[in-house]
Length: 404
Image (cartoon, rainbow, N blue to C red; front, side, top):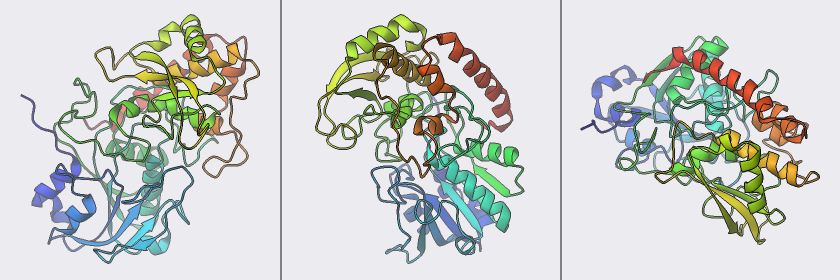
C-alpha cells in the first residue's frame, strides 16, 4: 500500500515545525484557482486561517488569483481582497514582473502554483520573474511543491538564445519533466541568482506510477489551473496541442475538450490522419487518434462545423513513455502542408504582446519547427535528430535539479 500523497501546501499546513521559520515574517502568496488543499480549500484561505502566519499581500498570475480570464492577453486588475483586506497584485495586468512597491509588502513569498509541465505555460515564467525580483530586493521565496501532471518524459527542441519571451522562460525543451520546486532550482542555477530559496517538498509523489504517471489519479481532485486545462488528458497532450495557438486550426477552445483535439472547416481529417500514418507512423505511438466533428461556440471558427482529430490518452492504450505529443502535433502540421501546400496554416497575429515574430516561432522558441513543416524535402529524421539531441542534453542538465 503506497502512502497517500501530500502536496507542499498540505505539509506546510499540517506541520508547525515547517512553518516556524515564517514566524513574525510578512508573507505574500502567489496562487491561482487550482491552489487548493486536499479538502479543496483555497491556499489563501487556508494560510490566512493559521494564527501563527501573517499574510500581508497576494499575487495572481495569468488568468487571476481566484477568477478565470478565459483567453490569453486578457489582463487582471489589482484589487483588495474583500475577506482579508490585503492587496492582491496582478502579474498579468499592468506589469508582468513585480514592482519595487509590490516587493515592499512582504518578506517571504510563498508560491503555490499548479503547473502543466510545458515550457509555454506562463506560470513558470512568472516563477522566474519573482525569483529575479526576490534576488534583487533581498526577499525569500518558498515553493509549495505540486506534481507535474505530465510526469517525467522530456520532448521538443530547446528554446534558442534570443527567443526568450513570456511563453519561453529559458533554454528548455517544450516538455521539461520538472516540478515547480525543481524548476526554481534550475532558474537559480541558470541565471546565477543569489536568493534565499526553499522548497516544501511533496511526500509520496510517484511520477512513474500508473495510472496517473505524474498526477495522483483517483486521490486528488483536478482543478483547472487555467480555464482551458479541464483534465489530466489535456495536460498530457498540451506540449503538442499548445502549438495550435500559433495556427489557424482550432485547438478546441469553445468546445468542452480544448487542447485535446484540433481541426478546421476546410480540412479532410481522415486524409490528414492517413498522411500522418504514411509519413512518420513512429510518432503516433502511445495514444489513439479518432476523427471527429465539432463546432466551437467561440474563438477560432466559432459557429462553424470543423472536421478534426481528437487525441485520446485516457484509456488502456495510453503508453506514457511512448507518447510524444510534440512530434504528433508537428506531424499533423506536416500532413496538412503535404496535402494542402498553400494552406494558410500559420496565424499572423499579436501573441503574448509580441508583434514582430510569428506566434508559432515564439511558441517553439525558434523558427526551426515551422521551417521543417514548410520544407517539402524535409524528412522525419531532419526534425527528430536535433530534437533528440536537445532532449538528451536536457535530461543531463536537469539531473542536478531533481528532488524526487
